[in-house]
Length: 124
Image (cartoon, rainbow, N blue to C red; front, side):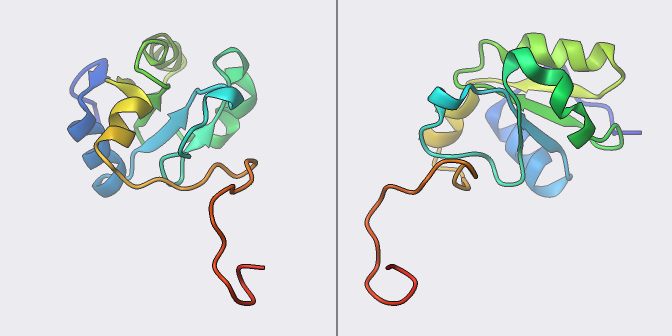
């Protein structure tokens, strides 16, 4: 079973520490049109209204940090996960806070990179 989280919501520093060092899972509940910079590395993505389809990706053996764009919707999803037996908390400030703190991101898998390309065989 997952280690007990300190509360129903996590400050950005707590969430990033849990994800980076404690092996907590990140669950993004951003809609596709809300992707700006990418995802927290290793995160599972689900639409807030389609949580059931992604529950198979989450383990009850590790805590879950629920992340939305601005921290407003993640609390409801974290509460729903807790009612289903997960150790879950929402991340305060959401991806807006994560990005403004310049914490690492991975590009969203189904979104094509639109930045500059390097010359050479890999950048073609």
